[in-house]
Image (tube, rainbow, N blue to C red; front, top):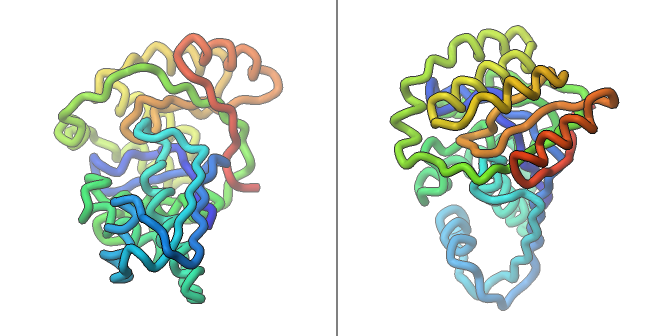
Length: 255
């Protein structure tokens, strides 16, 4: 089953409300009849949810999503694995069920602080997702146009006390703009707040807006940062992002 990475519009740690737009970076899981030696985390997830034995299935995984940099790789992984096992078992279930199971098991097994229900649901979706994570409540699912995006992955170190720092952030303004449908503005507000709280430099966001991007931010808990591009500014943004770190070019899922 194919799932997708995503970009944070609102980080869920401050308020429990998160918003994500998926992007065309894929995670694909294929399950076939065993026997197979499962990786430990694959087995723990499937054992937790489906009570399988390790010799029952063979699993292949392929990912285009960099790990541990804020692009939702963990949620894409768990959602893909769980959704694929349902498919392998011949069961059709709603994507919200897969997302809830993904969130629940991620929290239980320590893959996510909050369970990241917003990330899990976005990994299965094709537009903006906004959720209240602790209640597994969907606040908004909105189609968005396909937007070209450039992502830079700098060599910034995440602070160890991420949760403590982000719990001090007031995300009410970003939430307000997201509810109004202005997810560009929400992403910018969130990006500045998360960057300042985690000690990432703010100057790159300033520069990207100056060049002409109308949607910029730090995704997840960073350090990845992203910028929307168009035909007029793509070359300048691509060049600037190349000075920050590894560059990935993709687009949002929508349209």
